[in-house]
Image 1 (cartoon, rainbow, N blue to C red):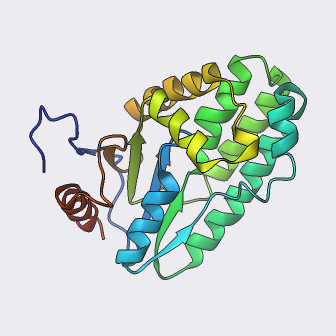
Image 2 (image 1 turned 180 degrees about the vertical axis):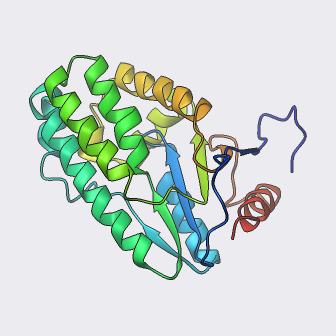
Length: 227
């Protein structure tokens, strides 16, 4: 582990609910959360290549509303978020049913607490649609298991924008910077109040686990504790 004053420090926090007990099975569910472009998919691929973990990626490419949403957020916000909510619920049912350790790229909690919340606050989703969305989310939340570990990738907006430009997904290139900043603020507020499981915060713009042996060792030994 790095020195507490080092900006590359990986932070570990126990945010488990007081009433939660240990899982009865040996299967572990780890989730990776973070803003667009924070490095979630890269970390999932890195960890799955080194451990016996089954990856579950966010169904971005399958969302039939996503391109329309980026073109007109107000018109397509509700449809796009409902798609993600239903797709994530299906994904959770699949990962809850598997006997393998699983690693998820973006969670259903982010969909609700970050993306849908942001759209509602910006008046890009009506109060009626938002209330309907929240009712469905609350019902779904009662049916799924929280993760055994939440990994939050903290990444400043400058680095997020650079990564978005480098990976070159056409529908992401025109995302307004103010939109990314608002998401980042909601992420920081959400993670400050997160209380479903142990939490690891990784400064993904500082940690280079692919080429730096010290960083690689730090992140692997941290995650291994929960496997």
